[in-house]
Image 1 (spheres, rainbow, N blue to C red):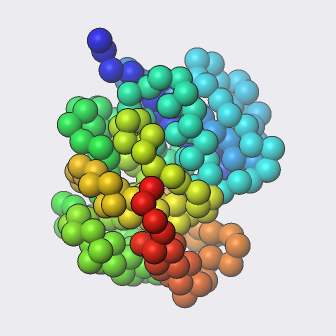
Image 2: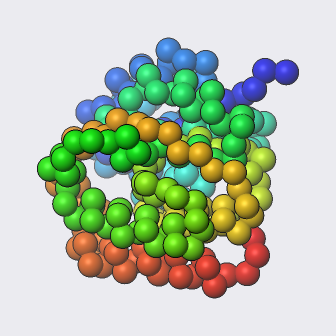
Length: 233
């Protein structure tokens, strides 16, 4: 039987890029789910005009992590074999979808990495985001021995059979770290593949005080610490 793939596009205030991202994704053999996380711009209106995609609307902003958690529940309930997550801000290229589709049947999680084969300079990356990524990636590797190069890339593919074993509860940006620790505890098979490094917005605001790099780093470290201390999933 042919595998069923669901492409998840989390969207919060993405009126500039959503239409083109969805259009590009339609070139591939995936069903598409767009999750509007309580956008306050024109995203909801734009999404209402897009045909042939599944849609979830959050009446208020629930957070990046909760958006993905809800999409995982949707994909599992609808019987998909694999879920691919891709950002809608123009930083992920749809022509890399086939790479994730090819790899994920052999793994539990296939994670995109902007640094796996990257040979450019860090001037192309917001300095605080690069520094925090490096520190958190090192911390995750010390615990899991996964040998990751990019713990925060949102371009990923998941086996729904693996996702069924997780207990993801973090609604904010720290949710991917919860994924990594649970994947380590359950001995998931992990693969990194290279994706393009594209930063279109060096002024991104994280909300909830997390735009302060020190606060954001402490938040991420607390997610890791709490998840390590937690019992079995």
